[in-house]
Every structure is written in structure tokens, then in C-alpha cells.
Length: 359
Image 1 (spheres, one colour):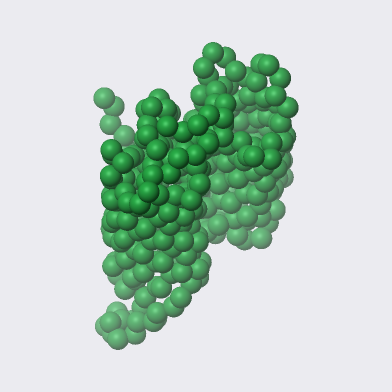
Image 2 (cartoon, rainbow, N blue to C red):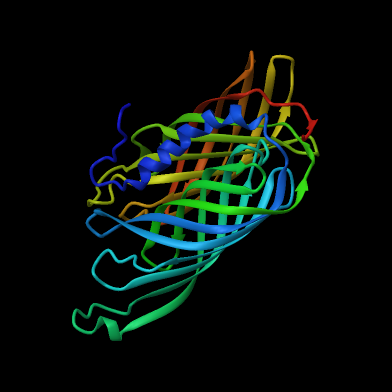
């Protein structure tokens, strides 16, 4: 077996995220024969985060916490996580974080068995750090501030005999107004409680995806392919909710001062799809918002916002669903410039399931 190693100067957390993306496809076969789920899970969470200092060197830290979540629908779960990060210092100064996060989990093929999910977090962060550069007296000059926090990522949930739940998740996490923009790997173990939820599961699918980003205008370009996963789930109103979540390597065009010339980012692109369904597959148009979280050091570090829209086609071949899509992407950098690009994407997933009763 080939070992997975991090590129020089890049956090090992990125290795775990890549392994997590590759595991999505392997998990799909085991999900089909799984049982219904209990509604509540309560347990503990451990995490590893990686932060870069001003020179671009990565530092790894640990965190711990507790979480509770309620499975409110076939495809949705809402939870609350309280996490503590006792040391996030990259420069010798004190930096601690307590995070109260409201979590949303999206399960395109349901939460049964081994279930892939996409996650989003909006939280309140309590950051305690040194108020200034004071080599001798920093312990006496600590300041605590409250900030909003934002996170998004993907993971795998595993249910064990309806009595326990484990989760493995990789995500981008940012606390605006602080130096915390990071990749995080979270591992959770929880007891499953409450009544068993049974429901009607609408068609849904998830699978690996790859894309190429072609610059049209602006100072950013892609220096490699987007690699990640595409989630899709039918709605009761006839449309489809889609999500692309990927890792993308970027580069700043023109003059640039290191280390911010080659930023790495997490791409989070939810959208709504209106489709026609001929016998051979699906033809659709999609539009939605875009968040790009840059976790490496440089002027683009943080979250950039934008929008996307385009068309795609799903071709059913046996039990597989091949996807090709193209869309126009608009992105507003954290430095204020606008970037326009065309994304050409390809993906593979199991064919969409027809609506059937859960067992």
C-alpha cells in the first residue's frame, strides 16, 4: 500500500481530507442494506487542526468537546457542538478558542449504515489571545473577544447496531477577526437514543468528482484540478438540491509576494437544479451560491463569496451515473477583486434511486 504524505509546507490535515474524499465511494455499497436510525445522538468529539504562521509553516493542534444532534428528516440532522482548543499559538503568543457551533448535516442517501454527509456550521467563538507583542508580560495582557465562526466540510457517519454512532469529518473552519483559518479533522463517538425514525427516502446520490477551472478574468487561476465530491437529492417539489464540495489549488496571477502566491482552498457550492429526465438519464440547469475557504497564508486567506450557474447531464450506464457539467463562476476575493471563470466538471455516482420506504 502506498503511503499518503503531505506536500512540503502543507498540513498533514490535508492528507486526511483527501483520504476522506476517496472513502465516500467505498461507503455507498454498505449503506443500502442498513436499518432505520434512532433520532438522537449524544457523545464526545475530538479534533486535529492545522494553522499556518506568517512564513507559511504549518502547526498542528488538538481540540476536544461534546455534541448532541437530532435527526429531523430523512436527509437532515441538526446539532450543537461545544469545542475547546486550549492552544492554537503559531508565534509563541497565547491563543485559545472555545466554539459553540450550530451544526447542519446533509445526508443525500439517508443516514443509515455507512452514510456520507456534507456539513455546515455557524457558531459563536470565544477567542482568548495576547493583546500585543510583549515577550515578558504576555500572560498579563490577555484579551477575550467574541466572534462568529463559519465551517463547512464532508464526512462519513457509521451506525453500529442502532445503539452507537461514529463520525469522521474533514472541514474548513474560520473565525473572522482572528488568525484562525484552518483545516480540521473531527472524530466523534456517540450513543444513539430515542425512538427509531422511519420514512420515505427520495432519490439521492453522492460520488467523487473532478473539475478544471478556466480563468476568464481576474487575478486568480487554478494550478491544478478541483478534487472532491458531488451530492444530489430530489425534493418533493420536483427539483433537485445539489452540492459540490472540493479541494482546489489556486495561484495568484501577476506579481505576488510569497507565501501567498499559491493558496489552497476548500470549495463549497450548493445549488438548485431544474431537470428533464429522458430515458437515458438527466439534463439539468443549476444555479447557486459559492463559498471558497482559503486556509493557507496570504492575502486571500479567509472566505471568499460568489455565485455559480450552468448546465449538466447525467448519463445512466448500468448501475452507474456519469456526470458532465459546465458552469460560469463568479468570485469576490477577500482583497476586493472580482474573478470570473468557467468550470468544466466530471463525476461518477450510483444511479438515482426511486422513492421507496425505509426499512
